[in-house]
Length: 377
Image 1 (spheres, rainbow, N blue to C red):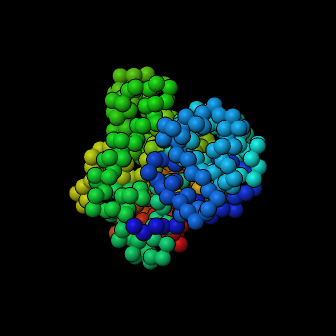
Image 2 (image 1 turned 90 degrees about the vertical axis):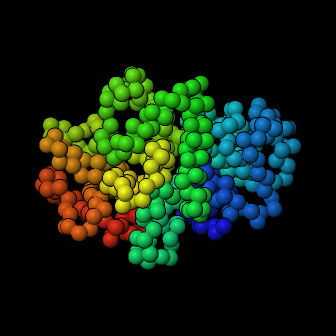
Image 3 (image 1 turned 180 degrees about the horizontal axis):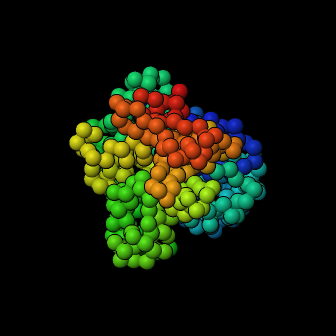
C-alpha cells in the first residue's frame, strides 16, 4: 500500500527534542499511528506503548518514578497511542516531562472529549498540540495536474478522504459503514456514561440531511423530543469527536445581518454519506450542491491548519435571505467564497454582500478552479 506524505509531519519535526510533550489528536482511522511509524520506524531508541491494551494501561495508571524507570529505561523517544484511555494521563505525562528531560514524549488521542480536562490542564506550558485530519487533496495528489485531480472529485465527494477508503476504493462503502458504526460513537458513548446511541444516530441523520444549512437547536429538539440544550451539548460532543464542526454567522450590523446562527458541516463527506447510507454516484443525486460545499469548506479548513494560518471562518446571511457560503478573516483581511458545482453559467458573489463589504476579496469556487482554494497548488 502506498504511503503518502502528511503535511503535519513538517509541523511536528521542528519541535522534536525541544522540551515539549507533543500531543497529536484526530479521529480514529485518520492515520495518526501510520504517520508516527513513517517518521520514527527507523529509530532504535524508541519505545511504543498502545493504551488500547489493558496491560499497558494498568502499568501506566497511578505509576511512580521507580516504575516509570522500569518502563522507559534508556529510551530517548516514548510514544503513547490512545493516551486518553489512561486514567490521570495528564499527570503521567507531566511526571515524565518533569523528570525525563532528555526523553521526547509523543502522545496520540482519538477524542478531545476528555483530553482537555485530563491532559491539557496538568500539562500547561509543557505541551504542543497538533491535529491530524483525513487526507487533504494536496496530500493525495501532490504532483497531479488540475485536470487529473478534477477527475477524482466524484469519488471524494461521495466517499470522502479517510486513508483506508482512498487506498481501497473497491471496498469504500463497506469500510465507511464499518467506520461509522464501529468507531463514530466509541468515545462519545463512554464519556460521562452517555448511553443513548439511538439519540446520537437520529441527531446525526438530521444533521446529515441539513448539512450546510442553518441549524436550529429548538427545531432539532422538537423532532428528537428532547431539550434544545441536550441537542446543543450532543453537537458539541460530536465536534470533540471530530465528526462535525460548526461555522458561526459573520456580522458587523446586528440589525441587518444574522449574528447568532450556526451551520454544521462534516469533516468528511464519506462519513456523512455513510450515516445516510447514500453512496449513489453524483449523476443520481440531488444533494450535489451540499456535497460540494461541505467538501470545499472542510478541505480549506484542513489546509489552513496545515499551514498554521490564523484564520477565522464564518458564513454570512442577512435578514433578506441574501447569503454567502463561506467567509475568512486572515490578518484583518476579509475574503468571501461561493461554491458552485455547475460551471456552465456565470456565477457571482451576492450583490448585497459586496455592497455591504466592498473591500472584501471574492471568488466563486467551481470544479474548474478549486485547486488554488484547496491549496493543492
